[in-house]
Amino acid sequence: MAKSDFTKLTTTESYPDFARETRIEALSKRVWKHINTDITAPAQDSPPTEKQKEALAAHDENEEQALGIILERLDAANFRLVDGKTAHEAWELLKTTHNKQDANQQYQLYQSLASIRQEPNETLPAVAPSMA
Image (cartoon, rainbow, N blue to C red; front, side, top):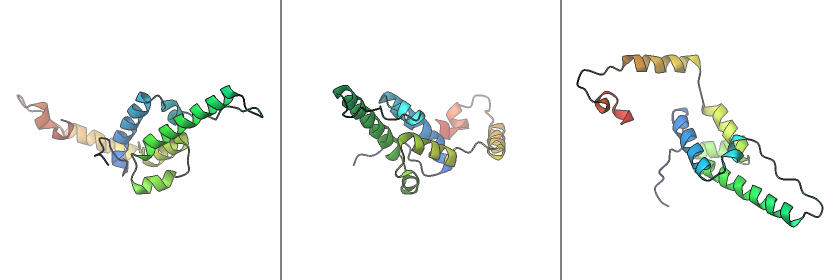
């Protein structure tokens, strides 16, 4: 298996990178709508027409691809958390579980930002090496 070039979701701290990279990949594969919204399978007559069969096959393929993009970026614990869910259900559950935007976190981020100072003639990578 090739080395992954994306962030695996392992902790709340890795969620922002995971979410951004997953969204970019889903947009590039044109399946973001299956993650971002709850898309139901197209209605089928009995017996289904050829167009309905094709629409259902396209829906299922896009749903599988969207879910696959999410699942390949999860550690074992998060995989178990969303096992059996649709792409949209998995995305919402992961967001609820890991996207912590509470007042304490915002205060800590503000404190970190306030402590960063760039000295005259100092390069940006020297000030914030993790951002370079």
